[in-house]
Image 1 (tube, rainbow, N blue to C red):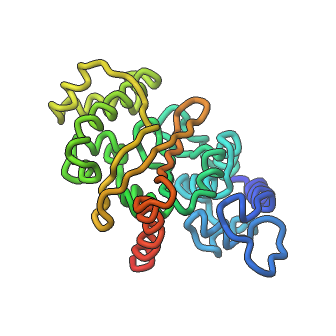
Image 2: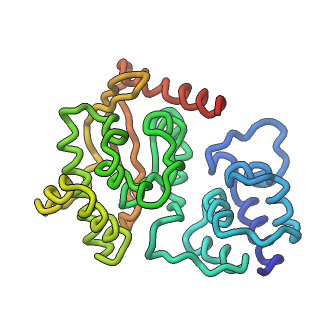
Length: 281
């Protein structure tokens, strides 16, 4: 662990960011250049004291999970993230495995979307980051681990939980779309990848998946008009728009409703519902 290099890098990256770059308000009496230490700590879900000790060259060696959180908080590129890991005394993460680093360009867009559901997904349907309205609509994806992180996997192995968000008459179409999306990821990632692992496990556990997999449909359909059913607000008619990274490994999915409609009002309420739930928790 190179404490000097780690501290210098953290300070430089923190000073190079403004609150608006990470979705924070500037607030009154701001004197420091860039972000405050407590703001970085908040974004990385760590204590301010712990982060401060890292910048002061006296903290313990951060774990890989902590470094991944810092990389996301500081909006690091993949190359900058790798450097952060190495000066902290760890090997750079494997870029061919499951995604752990979120594309900074998508994060910058997500930071500005506060009044409508939006989230960043992996090619395997894993929610990597959600804003407050998205968590209120879909639930907090952070509770899932292992294969259950994939919404495609949950769709077939936990249908009672995952499919409740969709009207019954739309579930067959969604099943086909889930399998077609997984086949696209499988073609890009290969049989020995995380996509291949999902295919093998779903083939073992779900006859429905096997039947749809044999249909050989391929495609990623995110731009769509659909109805989602919220347990408290009821049906919400939404339009889905998707923004992909260049290699199509991550997708920013944004849900909107026609202006001045009841559905738009329901989407606005999600921000309030989400905030109240998290405050209560």
